[in-house]
Image (cartoon, rainbow, N blue to C red; front, side):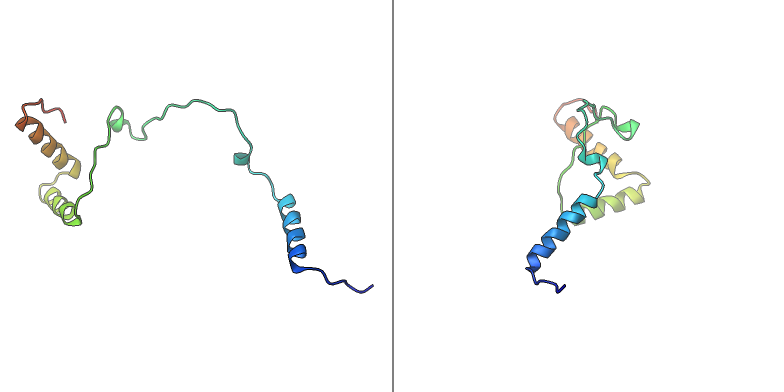
Length: 96
């Protein structure tokens, strides 16, 4: 029996349908009941803290990293120092 010529698109579409039917359905695709989960910090030392950041020239970041290295401290400590100075200059408690 001779093969009949069909459209390439029809053949590809039929192949897609067979492929999709043979794929297992991942568990993530099955809807699960909604559970309210409160976000928990990944690091306990960050509990109750909030990130404060900004965008600066790369030269600023590089200079601060050099200062931190020279003074054997961290960027976080340098930022804390800067925030506390701003608070002090404005008569606010140094709570950073």
